[in-house]
Image 1 (tube, rainbow, N blue to C red):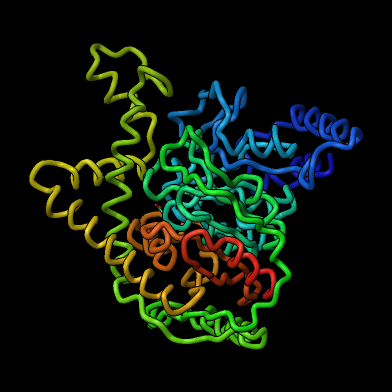
Image 2 (image 1 turned 135 degrees about the vertical axis):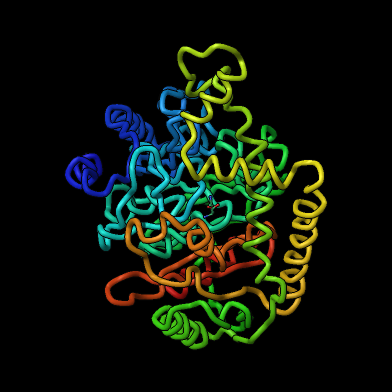
Length: 447
Ligand code: GLN
């Protein structure tokens, strides 16, 4: 009731929720109380949570912030939804705003309008998980789920003073998460601290036979080691991440954070990820290619928006997709179709796959030397609403530091390292495969 009341009071200004499930939330809260009264349930039972509107929820609209899915009600729950709400007993407050089909870095491509940053409502909250972070940062939810294909958990967390973690690819099930670029997409969580994030991630993680890329490996205890010392932890600073591009303010906050890690006993050394400058161009071939294939299913026939008064099947496809998808989604589909087409496949898609391998090998070499890699999450603090919305390339460059982790499939997180002129700055930590516990431990010690 406390959170529902805050949503009622403040969300008109922020637009962080697409759908608020007030009645269902109160019923779930009662069920959680009953469970706890019987001595059942766990640490998360009864704790409210907001879901990014990319995760399918039975009986509640799952729009992916697209007109295409404005009337779509999934007949099943995403695996993470049943794990968090049915198994762990968390209470769903609603579904959060995002960039349409998770394509964007500012939550301005949503069909439901942009979300504002609670730290300055004239600025963006980042994206694509902008609704999730705005809700948590404004106290309209204690934590929220999010997804990260190229930075959509970490960059918004950085811009709103939150902690967000994208786990290893395959650690959290993608079943029921609407696909953008399947080989890069990972679900995760945004919260106010590494400790909160650890609780939620623990409950989300695990093998799922319904996701063929899910990894069959026991889930580590993410909470047991949180308070352990990080003395002797080897942290690498990639030359390429500190070369240029970062604003002076971000550089200063990150430098101060490095000093804190040194005081905590970490050993810091410079490393190189020589292929990281290739991440953005590689991503903008691979991600649109996969998106063009994944979004082919929205044809106006099976589900989603259907154009009216059409003459034939071809017109049905064209008009349904033309009316249902926004400009950025259409741009990605066109880029993806182009790079996969005969005559261009070798020049673009195959080439990008080779670069992806080189980026992965950079990390393999780095993690032979260090335990974690540290750098900025974003080049600057939150930008103004509308500032970059007409310039796709400027928007794409927001993810310059975050994309490599998705291409390699490694876990990565963002945590706050202070403010510049009242606006939050994010610090990024990246780890080797399945090092979520180590990442969260380092972040918790820092916090
Ligand atoms: N901003 C990137 C993009 O627009 C990443 C989005 C994401 O991680 N979902 O594709």
